Image (cartoon, rainbow, N blue to C red; front, side):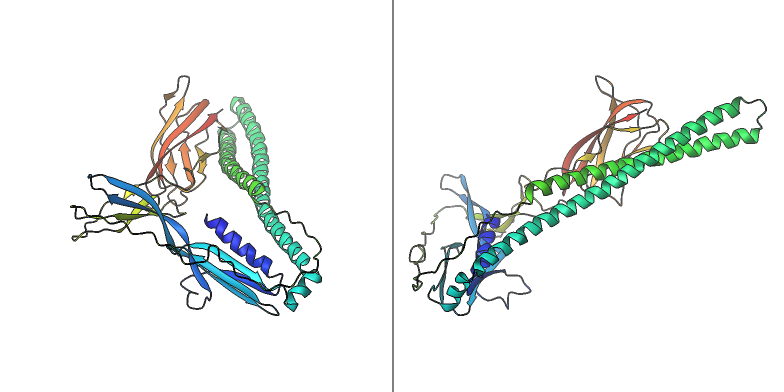
Length: 408
């Protein structure tokens, strides 16, 4: 609802600029509220009203009231033209109608239409919309290209280091069997194998992180492709306009009808209670998805507890990457959450059919980077495994994530 109202008004403002008068919509903030001119209105916000009934029950209704955090001002200006402008607010203070008419007899309006200025403005609007969509797509594509290059480089490095490890392993086996080899030569050959294995383990961990980042950038790119759309605009040559004076409309702009207020004659000391849903884009805000008490009727001002509500934001973070393979001897497997979490409570490593838990060290969440999860592989032999864990996110919400991996 909010997006539709704002878009309609702002788009209307852009189209009116084609003529000699225009309408602007400005959001009112604490910094500009003393300077912004025009008629002000607020977008609707849902509140939950709980009202006691005579039979001892309570009715729950959703009422829409002005949202003071989403207030806008509508204003007009012009030159070489005359216009009529009116705004209607309903009895609750919400915007119900807007009308803006130009005087088509004005010289500026006739010149603008006949010279083709309207066509130029339409194409300008179309070009701007296309540029915005292309910019979002280019940014997402650039991130994906960077992640792809990093992943390919790490895959190549892993391949080189794996070949070196195979070569060092073969050389070490030969030297250990050579009766003429000195102990110093045998120790050096064994250390070379250990160093090569460490390089392969590091490459594997780095590749796992790169794979996770690549999947995330792919998701962003897919969203940019499906949601960034340019409008289709058709322009035609303007024809001479007939002169007429603007006449304000009467429908919808008369006096508002105020509904009678409900009257209650109840023995209880409390009347209706009004709640507002606490909305926030921050998952870590502990107040997200709760009902905040706005007002309580009663002589002792007794505060009532908040109520849990369904979370309206995005779902729980996911754990990536899936189906990674780690060489035997690797110390850790690295996984990444799609968004930061708060903590990990229980971790279990499963294997087999039917699945059963194995003796594995618990996964550890990085205290600085709340997306990075490290699963030790010390006690795991070759095979397929599933890491299952419970975690806390978004201000105390519980989540469950699973990821599969293999050791070869």
